[in-house]
Amino acid sequence: MKANYHTHTHFCGHAGGTAIEYAEEAIKHNFKILGISDHAPNDNVHDYHVRMKMERLEEYLKDIEIAQDKTKGKIIIYKGLEVEYFDKHEEYYNNLEQKVDYMIHGQHYVIRNNDLSKLISSFDLRRKEDIHLYADFMISAMKSKRFLFHAHPDLFMCGYKNWDKDAIEVTKKILEVAKETDAIFEYNANGNRRGRVMTPLGEQPLYPRIEFWDLVKEYGIRTILSSDCHQPFLLYDDTMKEVEEVYNNLKLKDVGIIEL
Image (cartoon, rainbow, N blue to C red; front, side, top):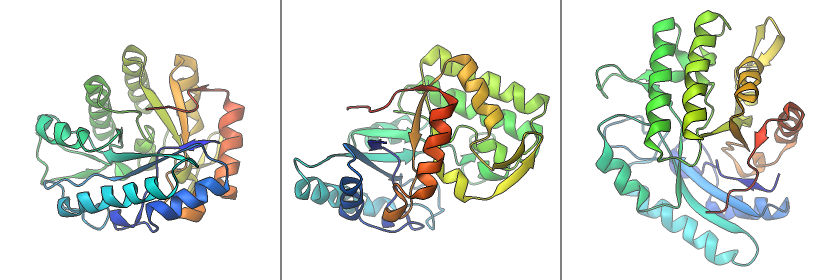
């Protein structure tokens, strides 16, 4: 593993470490590229225990610039943000795009009727109607063409654990649009830290779910491996190495390093 674009710092409120601490860890493991991509501030989403407030965005970007200056010639560091996609917020996305090198899409919530005051966690989707709603948001995000890649696209399987006809239908709807838009899907190592579930294929992490990724392979979707680390020492620890081995054995269509 030579690059990681999904990295969280203390600015998001539920992680630790500064950009320079992550950069030093990445250099230790001979990484060529490090992308810092904390949860984007959003004045309409008030979950400040898991994202920075808008007034801290410039401080966050400055922290990355300090790391860039201190490690010049040793590693490439990119400024990024992890962003949910909601319709009719084009000005918001335009403003973020001007400040960073890239955005990754992480659909941590879905909403109904464009009502951001009633967020539904994508970690806890229980009904078939909800996972189909998740697919709608994934499809809109892919069609927007705003994102470098789509983080943990199988997140809906955390709550909706059964690989039944609706889970398969949702996955195929998502993958059909991924193929049309040439989207990149992230194989997310942090799911291995969130617990496990018994499935017909044996015990698995809540995500990544092998059933989903077998279809990703069948559809020929481009993929990337990410740590989604929330502490510097987790960037390339033993769990990350184990997930990397699983990912390599799946023989997905890996894009490798993305130079921006």
